[in-house]
Image (cartoon, rainbow, N blue to C red):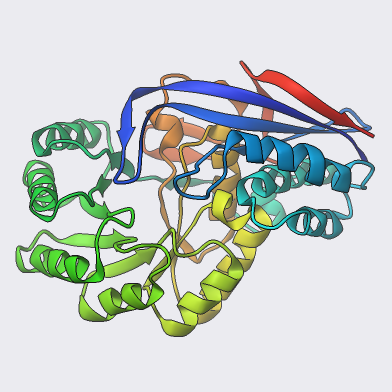
Length: 367
């Protein structure tokens, strides 16, 4: 099976309600879809959303990198030589992790189809179902409380609360949510780099003193402030989850060696795809550090890839894969199956995705 074509398209999916964090706000999932076509007719799908505020990747940089750097490196390659292919993607350009992730995911999808097995089984996984948390967007405390009640009624027992704008208002938000959901629901707080180390320590200690019972706090400080992240981790009892501070395996090694966080959040758009994510999983497991699997605002294409990784590695113990739930529709045929908070993988080869509807196909690079 050889790669004969790389196709690029765009996909837009409205959200049920606006999604707000300390970094950005959006009412639509807008993403770039990649289709790697083989000489057998099999197609591998990948995805790269533009997240300039986080990864620095824009639609322009993603499409340019895929068309001019990655496609020439892949056209004509044998899919069975997976390691050579993913290495070619990784070394095709500096940075551009989202574009690399799209191609890497599509390669793995084709490889799974070549082998006739779902990815999670090829990696040794046996479990097919897991439960995701649900994100409560950054809004007024009373609105966040209403959203939390609705999510719990829908069956979610773990909520991620977006904060990171104002200390006093953040405490009102978290307190309002805890009061309405009660003590049985897990609460995770995501500051999205919104605090200084001093503010983070003060805020987290306040939550601890108030008995708000927060399971973890995600990325409390700026991504580059590894020293500040370690100061926070060392100063509080609550588990600290690194997100924007960890992209590559090299980043993971630095954080692990300093013990600058208690856990790592793996996202395929940061790690450059499944290959980098698998490496980070191995490093974390060796260090006895648990991982969360997360996603940007993505469609079910790349979220399905993340789900396969999650079911194949025991070091992944927490799941934050709710973006498709937040969407008003699902254009992806096949892939991971959502039943409320429960996600289930099918046993179709590769990602198990048959097609993606509504894609505006554009540029095509052929051999």
